[in-house]
Length: 293
Image (cartoon, rainbow, N blue to C red):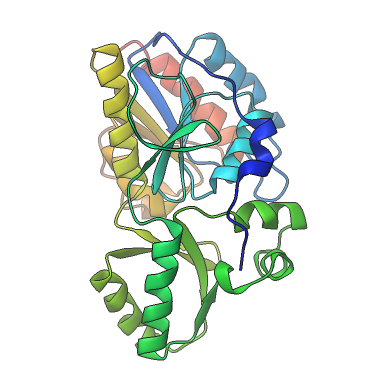
């Protein structure tokens, strides 16, 4: 059984911050292949772009399938002290003192946590019930050791530890038939759980997603600053379609326009480049064409 404590990483906790909102725009971005490499957290190609945004006080909000512990570490590397969204929109994490208004919410290492779906223990209870009652063959991170996770996910031991520390979602591998997978999906719906493809895994979370978490955090900014706030969303995943469609402006990176269901959207930019180059290209386009509109 994994250790879901995140106290060990509190030394990397972002300092208390309270920002004046210099612009009416918030940037919500995915991570893998854009700001970071999936395995090494390499960020060199986009550090200059991030620094430009930071100097202009444009919040960059990470909106990812990654865990709290992973994003704490990544934010330290890229010098980011803004709120962030974890585990496919399952929770919003706000640094201490970031917003002037205070609410009574769950806290982890000083971060205010807004859980939008079931927390980890409840998800595991539901999944075990579904697996047992339906005699279904699947397994997830809860069933595996750190070494198992590293091997199955193709990551090192350190990243496996950060992946183990889950708060509100569970990656699984499906080992059963296609027919039983349809039964599984029906059971997930009955138990108010969501299934999202994530590399070779399926990520199981509560009834929430990155788009709904983005909108809720956007509302918190609007309440804080008493002005209309707009969202710019970037992603390289077709599974983030809702987030890209719901944003006021968005960028699809490494997604082929001709085959994308997003091709008919009026307010979307398809980058010419892939990966970190496409991310920087999209930011430059946004600053030039949308930032002051």
